[in-house]
Length: 374
Image (cartoon, rainbow, N blue to C red; front, top):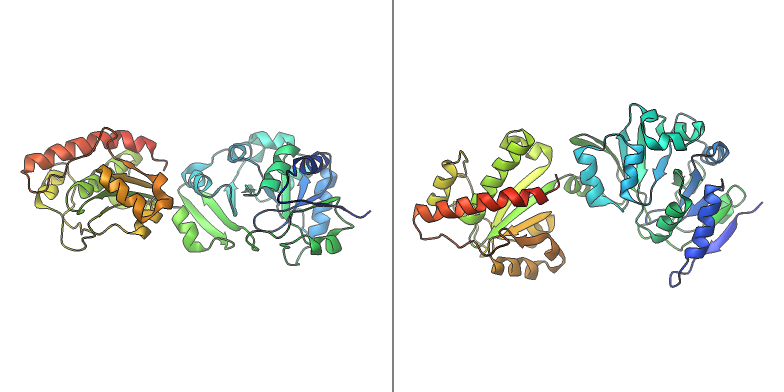
């Protein structure tokens, strides 16, 4: 029997057609669907015959797992007992999106989703005592996966060894006799497979480059905090030093180990000054707190620094305006360090003025760091 080809109109509401395919998927049908990367082939992991059929198409042995596809990030907890810091970092930054995450699962029977799958399905998901999870950034995929309401395993919609398809035309000829429904959503956005990363506690390992390369993955694995003042000689270096100290204390590590944990804290100035050193008074008030910023070199604020930052804290309202003017698309990441108002520049003042600034920054940082997801 030839698969039903369902053309989807990008300018119309395709919900009824996709919901019908979702119902069929839940009942055991094999459904081809578009994602932002390549077309996927989906099966219900709760039905052993569906698992067998997708294995036959892919020519994949029982020891080789399939990726679970989900419609919301929270579903990860149904398949993974312990997500870990790095896993949550990738989930927050990359999902939904073209990233497949692989988590170790030593005891698959301990997770809620295990009880919802057939024996064949559980083997297809946890064959290597790990699970691969994908949260596609595509409206049709989201509707299909959410509507099915079952654990869905999927792979690229091609026979084993063939090129992953980015359009539905070839799928009809190649798989038309082997699948039940093909949802034709036109050409995929990226024309490339998802990137695959294995995560383990604080670390990760690049398994396969795809839409995102290794450099992009490395940025996603990093939490970058940026403090901004005018000259980057007083307020923002003090904030940088205090922030590093507080984070190290919270994580139970040294300041030097923060970078190994993927945490970068920087500071910059809107005046564009580069070179030189921090002010003597700033160095002194930090030294009183056991913080050494004597090797700090001022740097000017740039679009690249803004873009790489996950959190941007500024000392005054005009710094916020500068950040937004340099990189309007990143404006949502920037906020006043002290919500109560500007932290005045102590430049030219006595050491006591710098001490007052350090005390205020320390106080507000304790609260601000509660917002930071590490």
